[in-house]
Image (cartoon, rainbow, N blue to C red; front, top):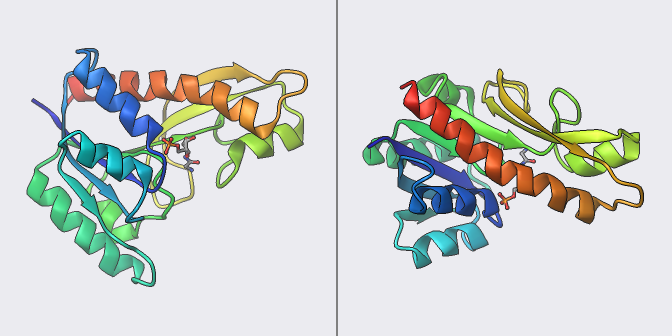
Length: 188
Ligand code: GAR
């Protein structure tokens, strides 16, 4: 069985959607480890509550390369095939990215290359686009710049707020991420 590492920093709803897809047999994989760089992130609480190997670290004040080495040790021990960033709000060091070239995935709530970085849905609203969406891509050393694997389009509605638009995009994120992971794992 192919194994996933999940890296998160917050709510963890994309992680939960992956976990659900596995539990319901839609995604053939197992979760080898869940790592949070924010000790009390709701996502890591969910991992613990569900008996998954959960690692709550604190990246506060830790140099990037040192922190990523801690993460790398856990990932290597867990012997995973793919690393899935799921709301992991910390840039990875070049050494980490090179160690797992082509094996790190991210989901981003816009149609990249539009609106990288923070508050992608608000950026889309502020720009006045009529269609936005989400993107699953391989992670390279840039900010949300790696090769695009899959995208889903989501309409922007009259009167949308950041919250209503984010919620509509999130539904597609949850579907797209598990599906894309499945496609990728079948090719490994
Ligand atoms: C998701 O919308 C994800 O696409 C976004 O953070 C949210 C995390 O939610 N990621 C980025 O913006 C990465 N640049 P979640 O913790 O509920 O999965």
